[in-house]
Image 1 (spheres, rainbow, N blue to C red):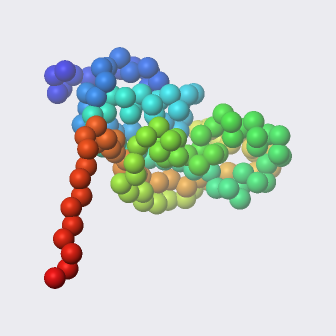
Image 2 (image 1 turned 45 degrees about the horizontal axis):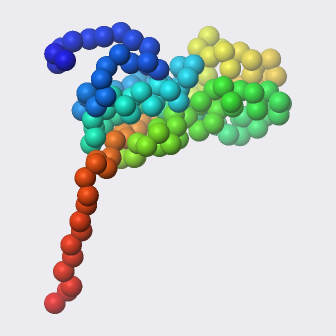
Image 3 (image 1 turned 60 degrees about the vertical axis):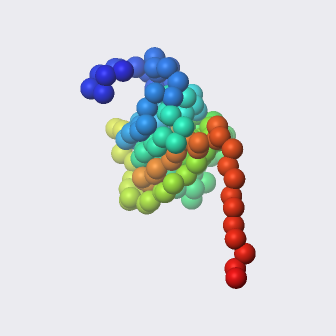
Length: 153
């Protein structure tokens, strides 16, 4: 693949062979795709061993989620990644390892940017989101590791 090639594709079905990229950058899009778990799995698949991915993660504050009716909350948590800890948890479950996670800011979700916010407002709840920037990597698990140590003299 030419270093300057660009392709447009669905994040949950990337038409690229396995272990192609050293780096993947995602600016918050994983939180907004219909099948975030599949998108994270695809990112893992196309990233080389030892490769790094960075992303911005959105996490809705737990105390705001608790203000919503229980049945609505259950349904939304099964559908909406930021309501169940954001995409970092999904990435770790897919096999990525965390390098760093840094808090960026906290803000209210705007009705025009989120269907979940519009629905929450019908219950009188204004959701706040925390934004984090994180780096994760695909471990180099394909080779044995030997650790040697010397006793102190």
